[in-house]
Image 1 (cartoon, rainbow, N blue to C red):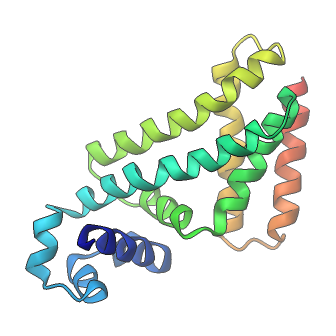
Image 2 (cartoon, rainbow, N blue to C red):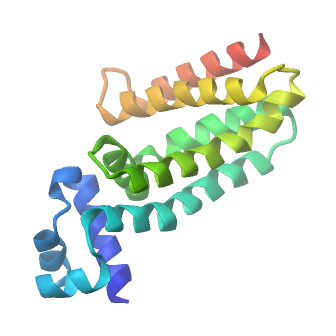
Length: 179
């Protein structure tokens, strides 16, 4: 339970204040634990980040995958992939992952984030192959680049509202994957 409370506090700190806010004193204060107790669960900030990625990213990815499974065609799957990721931008787990990826992390934490993103990209490769792309993995990575740019635009509170950004990203992706 304590580990879960620490992770929940870490999500809140990251989503409210970015990586700078994720400190052991802040975790201790948010959970009511002694600072030394936090070190019993995590040896470093990077360890907290790695655990968050291990716990939260699969949940987020499962939501994207479930959205894709509810539709039939390759184009519908691609649209669901984009829309679900952008709908999750306001989710606290997603804000924490964005804050994590923007911060300075050790090589191990960065590798875990890359691996998690690789799993997300792998979900869309089959749909792109079904559309006849000769290099579906490359197309998937570029498609994810559009999603990532839309996420950043939404996170920044751009002049456009999130629905406009989502519609533009979906249109761009679908026009691009159709060739």
